[in-house]
Image (cartoon, rainbow, N blue to C red; front, top):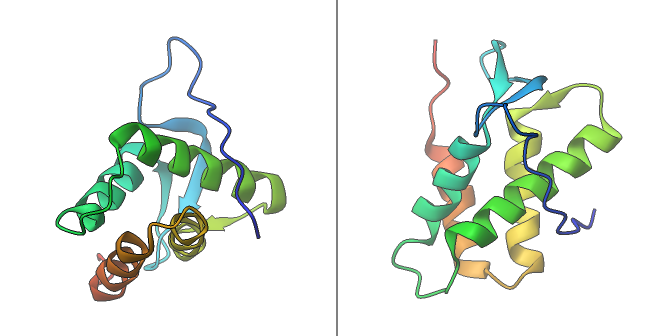
Length: 113
């Protein structure tokens, strides 16, 4: 699965960081609204200390690309699918250390109740 960088920010008037049409299923089964700021924040935290020059703008593009690909190909999107998509997108763009840390970070997360 290859992720193309297409910047598709929410239309004017929508709250930045959320997509009111997009819901995702969390690991614990809860359904929540997609929040790209959470994805961008996770990417940036994984990037800290790696020495890889990943900007917040690039992280936004990655989050948008992953979401666009998942919406296009799936009726139900899970947090696992998003995590796998981010990992793959980071690797495709040669952010290998960030991708590894992102995957480790996601594995350590405990399902919320």
